Structure formats: C-alpha cells, structure tokens
Image (cartoon, rainbow, N blue to C red; front, side, top):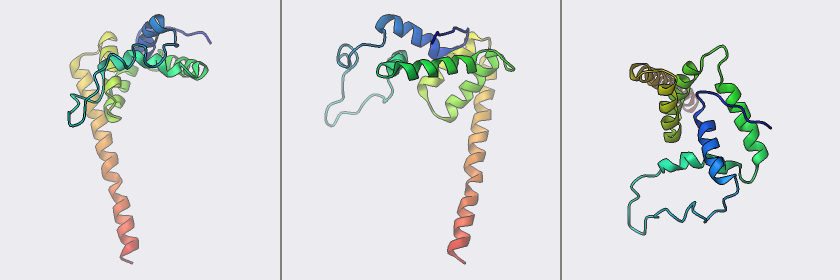
Length: 154
C-alpha cells in the first residue's frame, strides 16, 4: 500500500525518518539494544521510557509489514484534515495522549500541536479537558461500588 503524507502526523513522520535508515530489517542486537546500558542488580533505572524509542516505531512493522502499512494508512487518514483540521486533531491527540499516559505520544503530539499552530494555553486547556473526562469516568465507576455493596448487603 502506498503511504501518504500530511503536515501533522508525528508517527508517520518519525516512521518515514527511521524507515529511511533501517528499511524494517534491522535485526535485534545490531545497534538496537546493544547501545543501551541495562541497570544491574540493585541499580535503579533512571527512567523507564527511552526517548529515542519513538524513532524506532517502524520496527513494529518488521515481522508484519502488511499490518504496519494498514495501520499507518489508517492513521494517516484519521489524522488528515476532514471535518476537523489537523490542528484540532493534534490537540485531541495531545489530550488523549495524557489520558492514556503515553510519554511517546505526549512528545509527538506536543510537537505536532505546536507545528500545527497551537499554543501552550490551548494545549494546556486540552489536557485539562482530558483530565476532567478521566476524573469523571473514575468517579462514575464509583457507582459500581454502590451496586456491588448493595448486592453484598442484601
């Protein structure tokens, strides 16, 4: 399947950059994990997520490039301008990235939102919308506690 381009598609942009370097066939061990320092017994890792891993996203397509291409084409279609602008979609993606707590997505959609013309005030407001929805969803699930308690105490 042919890949299309768009102005605000962080994963697709990263995918193309990394694919140009690796062409989906870098074997594990050849530069992928070898350059990383693994914490030894009793040592704390400085962090869990590696910032450079976002650029490795195309490796997901190594063993099933057909599925990777299907996903990327779907993703590019979703993130292209339609009823919503690419700027609006980048803000939504940034908010969702915070709701699902994906540091890679937060990095990608912070850049995507800025590149699409959003500012920090708009981005922060979008994050607050996500927080409010996530908080409300947590609270409404409290009704499950009431339902379970009612069954137990009947």
